Each structure stands twice: as C-alpha cells, then as structure tokens.
Image (cartoon, rainbow, N blue to C red; front, top):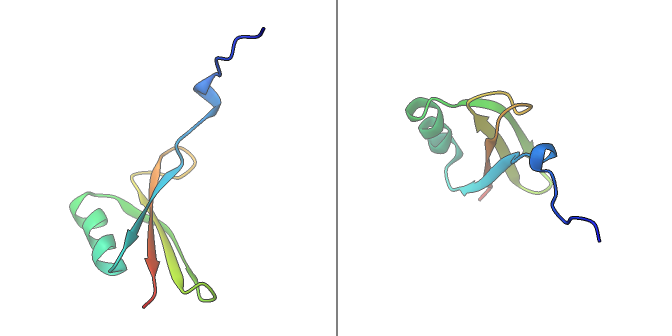
Length: 72
C-alpha cells in the first residue's frame, strides 16, 4: 500500500471571500487602514454583484481577499 501523504508544495491558499454591504467603505478600510491595494474589480450585471480582489501583493504570489458585493 502506498503512503497516503500528499506533498503540500503544489497547493496554495488563493483567496478568501468576504461578503460586504458597502463596497466603497470596505475598500477604504482595507486600503487606507490596512495598507492593501485593489488588484482587480469586475461587475457582473446579469448576476447583480461585484467582485473586488484586494491584497498586499500580486495574486500570482500572494493570498488575497475577495470582497463580494451583491447589488441591492
């Protein structure tokens, strides 16, 4: 029987999602108070939501936070 252990070197925590009520206030908190920066933001009109990814560095090398804002 083969060892069931898996190498974690190929796994990475990409992002955590937080649902927010006010996207602008949330972006202000994470950028101004915590020093993160907005990495990308995209609106999805058909689903009536916006995703905003923020973090301390590029998504290729860092774990980031996904702010999810549901319209209305």
